[in-house]
Length: 485
Image (tube, rainbow, N blue to C red; front, side, top):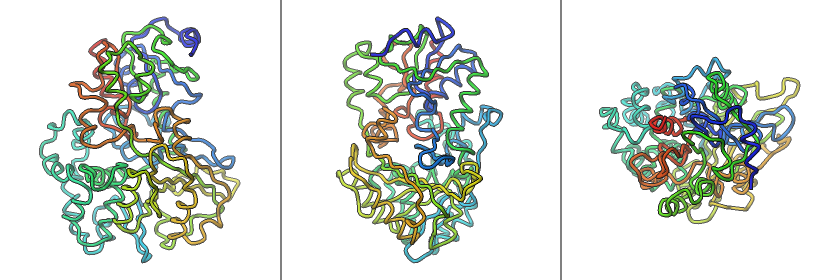
């Protein structure tokens, strides 16, 4: 059990307006919103560094900065709340790759997600016009669309755009790609984006993920944070401190009684962790629902240090920030379905990030070294090794890739959960985001961030709108908490 004294003794004040437990992007967003409104805020973080799933570290060789978890941030740049903060003044700089996404195929060609819808359509062959008709009506109004879409509780705020988006978004990725596209290239391209949902592509609402990622790619791009994803929480923390807020690291909370006195407490933790630290303060029925919250598949991730750029068969792939390796929709569907059946597909669908292509500050200037980040989805709690499966898939599209590996670092579901206790079974997405758990996230309540205990709130990715580095879960939780202040 954590000693109560260290947190209380290290805090500058005996009483706060708000204490935030956890310094992931949502916890920091909640703290930033409250500090912006003049509240006295304290953030406590168990680890030695802030950031949650948004950290950067030298995982392979000295001087090479790898993103430990999140890497590409379209919703970070597109976040309605982050846009209200002067994060650039606090060190955050977004960098755009020349091409947002490349999806190579076995014939040596690639589908490419450009900022331009026209350029993207030109890589989709006979489905170019169909892609344009699907995406073009939604892209110009991204600001309004995003503000409405990212808060499921206020979808009626943007009726025209949501009318266009609504029906397709409720359907499965397979259903929409069958209805819209004729060729296999566009179907695979759309399915790869939909697979970010961690759901089987036959599941309802998976089309929404493909649509949103395509739209945001055209509207704001798929950028990286210069210097590493750690720059995002660092900028939020700098802003919080500029407003008078405090942040304590190495401050593990095992019980809410460990915290200094405050009017409200907001927890950027998963429902299981929240039930543990709140304990008998919560009504038994509510606590049972928290413990019944469903977590999804895990991730198996590899970071590589290379002595040369990836030798892609199609050289244009080397200019993309993100790469999807799954040559057909059937390959991607089989891979995502397998994780729900307790298996890893051979080959798996692989998601890669080439951040150093557009951000050389992540690499040492005095060495010829390159960095690559990649993962595949695996069953919850999977304890096997997917290294060979992932590298075999890379060799398929970049023959000779293994010859350039200097060092590598792997993380399976167990390592992810050890790194961040919120990642139950390696689920980096904050829990299953299907239709039922979108509405009841984490439980069905009029204000999902509020708990039955007055002044106690949840603000993690296990609340609406769910996973992603956008801070909106924390922002909306803070809005709810302001009523108690």
